[in-house]
Length: 353
Image (cartoon, rainbow, N blue to C red; front, top):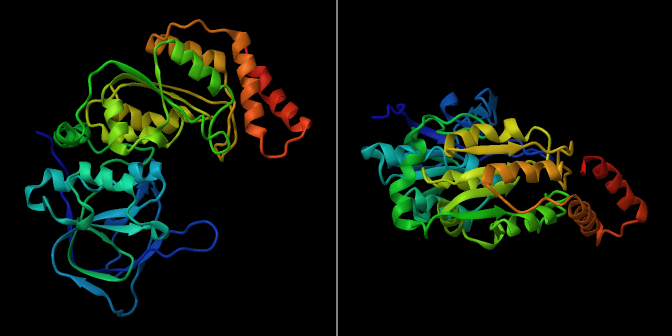
């Protein structure tokens, strides 16, 4: 039997909403007991994302008498919502005395409960009516605080954590068959995060028996169902990868096409804890904003062919033609000059076969 960590009970504690600085987001709140238990951690646990300040004077606050589970910051961004806003919910599934209690989030930038997060909460047995948003000062008679079960780009609490969702998934997201091979594409996001050559990878994978999936066209439940019924999934680097965190122990063999340098250390902690088999290819772009990146398309296709038994022939001339196509599509609508297109091509061309 798994040994789960104990939780902390904070009594008669008042929390304020998150405060935001101008420009870059500054996450901070005040607490009548500014304990480190309320801290939100990232990476290896050494990076603290919130400033917890002392509440230095009495303030008027709403009082909640029933026990409540603290769930940390609530993010709007799909990837951050699944990688950071669901990993303090596990005590409801582990401890019988906490089953059914309400949960409290600190909304980031006043975010509401968006549909995809409601779906993720439903998989944890939580309804929207059981969620308290700390968007005003609240005094909790008893606030239950547990450690994060998984850190963004960091470790997972223990190896049995993914199995906590298996019972719920069997009821809510039954897998429709097995053995699908899917490519989760970002080709509709050329200006916000794709890579030159994605048109080729889509064509190569279609010819190898893969389905092309655009995650934005599916609900969370549908996306989880697709992944749970697949033997192999190839992802273009993006937020859809975090849907694997809702798949329980039934995940496909996963290949991630990185758009930037550093993709291997960025995704290995997560994939090693949710997948039986995975591989990450590093991108070649230094663009920190993750806009369209460039990579060794031939090398990536060859790696996918071995990893996922993708048997279509790899044609260097097709790669070259379709990379040029992607560059044209990227600059269309931005009133480009011929120099802009040539400049992009000069950056990409050395990495083509």
